[in-house]
Length: 306
Image (cartoon, rainbow, N blue to C red; front, side, top):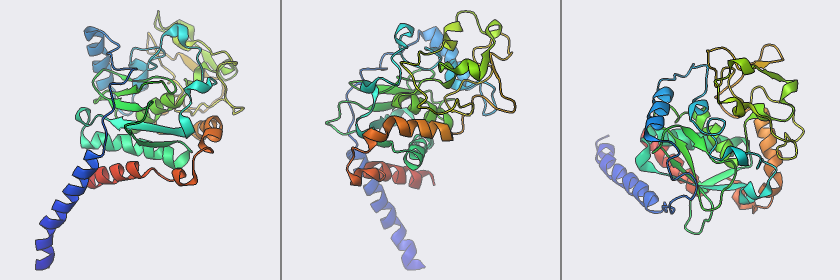
């Protein structure tokens, strides 16, 4: 026992060295071309941040619905919103997404939340996330230097931001949702066939936000033949953009909940697999396991927190 106790400082020193070396191998990407400029005025940013901070885990609305962008959390101009998931140029090469976490923006616990969300994609889909490398031309950078939870839709050339407001947005389901945007998905209730499944209660929508409930053209956005998904993590909550706390979306099927934020639904996974199956199949067999760089980063953070 005495010998073991004497070894503890040495073990800790070696562990620290390994983590430090791992940090040195994390290359910092250039400033992302998309999402580096704050999308809100100072007053608007403060208002959005406060509303999101006040939400608890049981809130009836999702934090991404309050983020002040197109449909709440999509970083694009409304007039360009028809660049849907059928656009092949927005797909990530070989189904692999390089990423970088701006560590100064997040606590260790928050960084682990992000990594656990990535791990869900690794466990349930063919999508792989690996740490950014110097020769990458497209990547995702996780930041928390702006208000709200938001992302671009699909791969954008020159780097893109997934913003997760430190207080309110760094939650497992929120990270899953924003990453699904980054991979190439819009919101479920905007599907071209949505009127067969939900009723939009226009009279309860906050004036000026009606466009958030527009439908997409079937030639731009597809469900890959998979039935409408009330349980999608990409579905608005029932009271999204409500002016009077009354529902703005009503399910035409009984006993369903809209707007869950626990994780990927079975239909989310199925659609994602359909979207990327050809690209994932282009990877070398060795690339289908969890990327070593991610595993190293996850294990080092899990060791710190655990």
